[in-house]
Image 1 (spheres, rainbow, N blue to C red):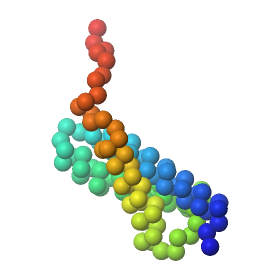
Image 2 (cartoon, rainbow, N blue to C red; image 1 turned 180 degrees about the horizontal axis):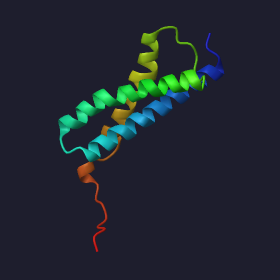
Image 3 (cartoon, rainbow, N blue to C red; image 1 turned 45 degrees about the vertical axis):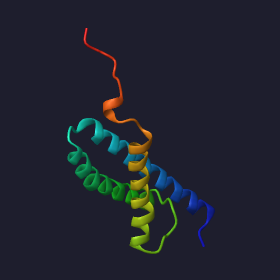
Length: 106
């Protein structure tokens, strides 16, 4: 049985990982000029960072319950936040081309 503290820790892991995935996706969309570059960097780098964050938050910080298997951890703490973060950036945030920046040249 999962305790309340374990469930809250798991929600913290999912929230932090989703936030990092959304920020990294936004960074790649703003900085890279090609669509394929954004897709490749997002599919390769973000999951690696999420696995490292999950290891730190669940191992060192001892957040979250024992999910029982590696597949469950990858699905709940990596794949779900990855999908949430990328979906948040693509569907909620405006496209980088639509954002007007102030003119800083004097």
